[in-house]
Length: 245
Image: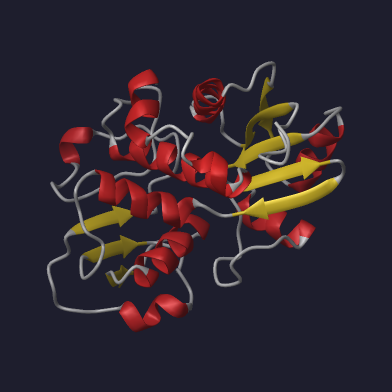
């Protein structure tokens, strides 16, 4: 393999709840596509830093974990990881020979998923309700790619950030997301307005659900960070991964 990618011994997901998580399956699909074999899958339940440290200490070897709530903020603080300061959270953490690395691909995955369903981000208006690290990551990238934002207060406040210059008022949004809907919560699909995108999913998912497209897209963005440039062309497309889920 040479310098293409430091292949971990384990990969999977950490957070709570994770039973419904498709991330380990996506690791397998991409890994097989890339020809990586023998990497073990892990589901690590952790509600806080103490759990995280206790559980990851048991892993003998290098690992790459997708981080889900509630750990995204906590881990980034604890390990003082490279990240975009404005977001203050990570969704991927790697331990390679004792060195920690973390990054955040939630926002970029959202952009790629929106492109995939045929929406051009530039000048499109996204309405967001609520806050949290995924909301901040999405607001950051959305504004960076030329999108406009309508921000509505939710249970949590999104806080300040470089996306403020993209905030607009009094327009009809092209799409909207509610970050107050928690991951793994059952959603009545009939209650969702037409342009509303749900980014959490449960075990009753369909491959064409926006949440699943986004999950695959942000996972592939993480691979792009992990592999060297000459290896990127070998990565599967969003469509190829979805077809195997």
